[in-house]
Image (cartoon, rainbow, N blue to C red; front, side, top):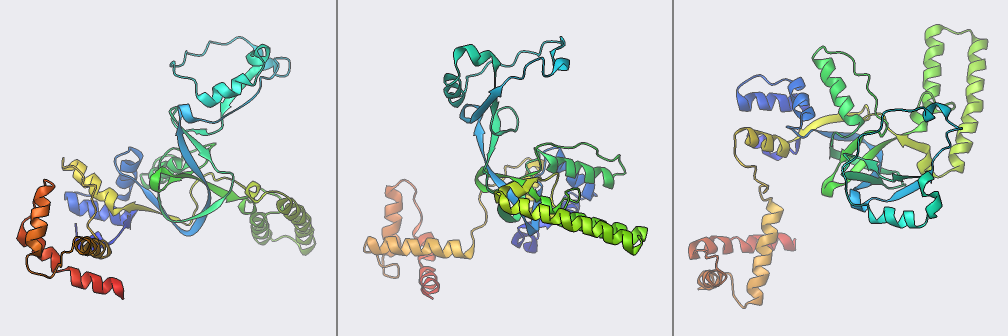
Length: 350
């Protein structure tokens, strides 16, 4: 891995393909990188250049899920649903979530047959559920793609385009997701103002002006359409201002168009090491700031133990202490570390 690459946190997909081509000595295309990501071999990420809006979520297990319930509809309301059908295959037996038991206790026993429980969280894989916050927040910088929603469909569509395959017509109901640190998963949100099919939205106006220009409407007809839009716009704004801000957004059907697909350099290293049958190191190279912080901590511990790092015999004292804890370090090694302490302390005091 080049020195310059070590300084980068991520590469674009074309750059990642070029790097892998050099690393493996064979041609690796952008489509190959996407296929590796789709097949679970390489973690793909996205850089939100202009930020994005999302609902943050927490992943919980089956036993931790929150529940809500509703009354089963009557067959007379949906006669087509009452026709006989093949019985559903039995589900794998598992413990009932405590919060579902609490909910069931609130339902009279004679009404439980008409009670339908549903998990509040989005079902990821039957074992994990994503419980989303109600508020919409702004996210930025680089996030990973968990490949559990429309983000996977986007990548598949791009892969098919690059390889001359068919158009991807699949659609997801739960939206697109990204994953951050500590397992946080966010559902990307879109504003109704950016939906061209929403009457009164800014996006609808852009589409309308484009249509007027292309089809060369007469002035009278164009004015009529724009006046109708102004009426719809007033209704749209009144409704938007009267409700909770979060209700002005809905789950995005895919990743934002101005988001850039990238691959983290750590993901590239892990992928290369996996192919070379060598374990991926979890430790990142220590930064200058981290090194100076550790040296400062060592200086503080020496001061607490009445040891002068620059004094005679300091290395020998610390070497003896390392032996006492069962992890011996030589005098020479300790002496080299102690010599770096003055510069570290000076830089911290600036």
